Amino acid sequence: MVAVRYFHGGVQSTGIARPQRIRGDGSPKEFAAGTFVTRTEKLDSEDRLNASPSKRQHPRQTGEDRLPGDLPPEDLVERMIRVDHAGEFGAVRIYEGQLAVLGKGPAGTALRRMAEQEREHLETFNKLIVDRRVRPTALTPLWHVAGFALGAGTALMGEKAAHACTVAIEEVIDEHYDHQSRQLGDDEASLRDTIDRFRADEIAHRDEALDSGARDAPGYEALTSAIKAGSRLAIWLSERL
Image (cartoon, rainbow, N blue to C red; front, side):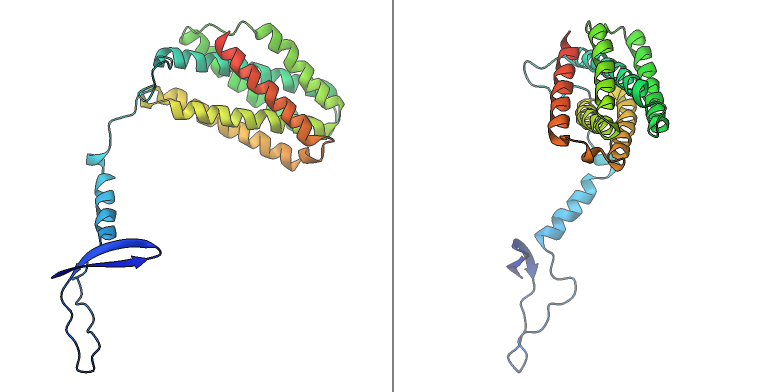
């Protein structure tokens, strides 16, 4: 028996093979079946074993990977609920502002449907705020005014600008909810599932706005960049105040 090495696709593998016998014409005979097992095959087998239920890691807990100085899990979850409640409240106000301008036009039906989904999200967080005894952000009065102003202002710029506003907001929320979902462990599975479900709704809103011509809005890049910056600032403030 001899150890052999070979390269396949730039990856070195090792294996064990029986010595080759030489034919009369000087060419080596093929390896006998089952006599060559590569290290790659061995690792693949081990990976499959480790993926079995008996080898899985313990359920992941919220905050188990936190670093020194990071929030304790209970404070992290409280902050999540606070900022998400504020975000859904702001989203409702944005759609109310857009509907005040565009509600009777061609975009009215889609805007009303998306606004209703945001109200459902807000009702969920209204309940979580109470059930988990989380203090709402002190900036709610500001978001009440700012959300409506943003919605109405972009709608006055035209239907496509209103859609561009939706794209900008939903792209930020998509990233925000994805980050939260990754932080939550199996001990917060219900909250994580809620966030994942709401994130899917926000992505659908973004895609619908893109399909409705958001990118054709005048100054699309500048407009969406400004709205995204404002949204990220609102998230940072609502988490802390």
